Image (cartoon, rainbow, N blue to C red; front, side, top):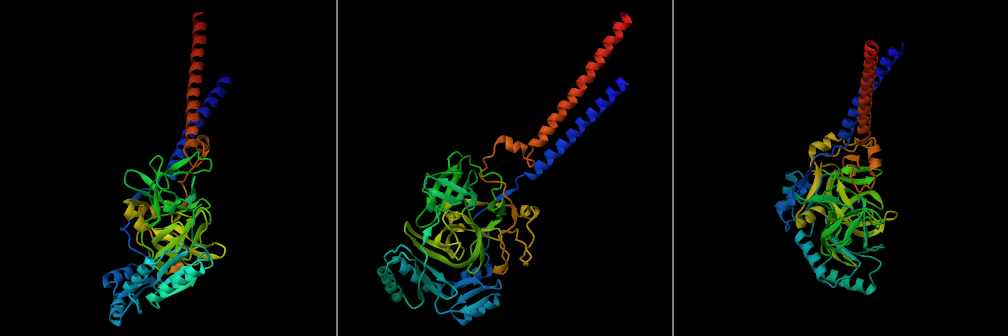
Length: 466
């Protein structure tokens, strides 16, 4: 009976070891599949069409002397401002809406140029309002009565299509996205990941820090993210932070939106007036609003920045550098503005396409097939369409636009220990430990049996030849 029990124990031990090998192999395979970094590609700034492709194409074809901008109406249709009925007929034949206005884009640009030549007043901004066919000049509460009076006189000399407005907020940069990066100058938010083909970078706001600034992922300065290698401010508002190891790592095509979730970026494009957009920042998280103007100029106390996107999306200190996007398409980098996310306000963004062109880098995006395979989130109950996996944004009504395909955030500045990663069931560590334990058990059972056979052999022959 003793020999029978030993055989049973050995067989059970061998079966358990083999089962452990199979289980460990399965765990490793599943973890590898779960953590596999999606294929990514780089898209140059001029590779994608805009949200209002038809309107933008018509404006480019008809010229700035016959048109005065384009925007998206509440039904998602492109509208083109034109200066005469003949041009309006051409626009309608192309399938877009036409609105006859009194001033061409050339006149609007001439008005903006005159304002730029006037003495600089910090706390002022102006933008071309395509819908009203006016140039809107705004002054925050820091602008004195005398400066406001002088600027009003300049505007009066231009013409009635320049509209003056006072705002209760203060135009400030949002220094202090989705994920926070810190330096001795303050805190900003990481924008989009970009590459030059050999190294990867973070595209963020230029006012966050000059060239040479060192960035960290923690307040103690223990986890270095990278160093600013190129910066534009004032004039533009963008900069490149080169990763310390030159690699953006897993999730480089994803921007964080909070609660461990992110949006997969599939392309880059230009914003359109009337378009619904989303931005993410380390202070206020995910917020949405509408593009209200293009080619805006803002006179921050620190310097003047031109060519910005104006929106009614709110932002607060610390959101600077964070990404703006819609339907998975990268559009802008948070620059500054007025107001907050309690009372609302105005936020300006540096266009991504212009920054990429001047920096000579390309946006890191998910391959179109990856976006479809990653399980884009279903349309909300409100009936919003599925996000497009193409670099070209879907022509949907502004109110129905979505941020893009949601996915777990797998990248970022993770400071977890080796032990934590090994014991994470999403990683291969547990599977490898099971395999190692099973191999030890299998070898041990073989060794024990060999020892038992050897001793039995000795006993048999010592009795026989004794």
